[in-house]
Length: 472
Ligand SMILES: Cc1cc2nc3c(=O)[nH]c(=O)nc-3n(C[C@H](O)[C@H](O)[C@H](O)COP(=O)(O)OP(=O)(O)OC[C@H]3O[C@@H](n4cnc5c(N)ncnc54)[C@H](O)[C@@H]3O)c2cc1C
Image (tube, rainbow, N blue to C red; front, top):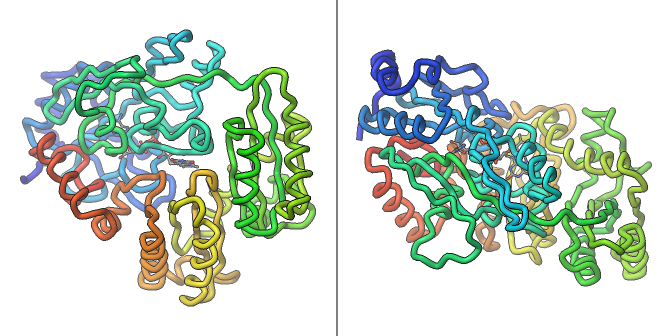
């Protein structure tokens, strides 16, 4: 179906439906994305203040066949929030809908509007002595509607699950403008199809999330953080098993860091305090969160000694203060920025079955070496089987030297390997516009067909985020 731009005529008609202050020209920030890979265009920016305004805007866009691109914090890394081509869309930013509507501490439930910044949701939970465990480096900017729409992961998935696992219910506006009130606080509700799980991870292609009912957890009474140097990824995997055998669900993060990542930090972010005097081949950042009465330092020391005895660990640092804990996390969280400054030829957000991570790293390394002279930095959420496996030019060259065919060759070869190993080519960032072809190549054809049927049923005019996830 042909779509029309969000032009002046459309703006004039919209002003009859919504208050004038809801509409304005898009700001440059709504047309950029963090890695600068897409430049967006937008005819009009809408900043609705409540769900009825969202409904009026979407209903009008549907009637006029104008594309709608929902916008949260703009931190998505696959171009889902940016329309680089096609008729100029209505960019629908949820930033004014940022209220925490209710907190139910005894139920461990919090209801937030979709535009609430993730860090503010965490703070609101903390104010009630509760934990909202979704945590990622972009949490000061990303908004809960965007987190749910991308089914964000981050560092707490190992213990608490991803955004999908943390959601009990949604309020959303469907592509025809109808408001679906599914803000359930129920943990058990077996009444047919689970609509919230259709919208979660849909990246704005099936409707606009306007509010969410979220799960909270008790804040662990005590916590501890350590960096352990490991001889290999296989040792890191055994260390993860050992840690979970000893500490159970108390292991709340287990992040693999490659020595190359520390060298990149040294090269481009020298102010970040390096933990080890000499860069290790590999290390892991472990965090434990424990119940009252347990001593995290003692737990981590015991784990360290046991791991050394078993040959799983060569050296280690256990944070002795909050400042040191922050330093450890700062190392992990600045690796993406260091990567950005070095400039990757090709970046991959992949997952494989957890036990195959060492094999993937070894096969991936050989594969990349067979394609040319590259540097590799693999890091990430090892406990979830999710790695950011990034390929860089050798020193003295830049990513521009590999643009086009060489970069595409690297990506294709690595994604084929991931697929052969039963993995996913998008573990946590989504499909957006960057991975539409990958989805077509690797997704089970029946699943892909069902996705298209669902899209056509809910959004027959194809106004919701056209070109994202499914080819329009
Ligand atoms: C430094 C950095 C670190 C990151 N680390 C992680 C990480 O560890 N784990 C991880 O999973 N991701 C990570 N990301 C990616 C990003 O932060 C997440 O994808 C985040 O969930 C996006 O939220 P957002 O509000 O910025 O969404 P946006 O970027 O605004 O939008 C993302 C997608 O969701 C859609 N959307 C937004 N709001 C709504 C809504 N209310 N209703 C319907 N659709 C909507 C948009 O159309 C778009 O398709 C990182 C990004 C950066 C820059």
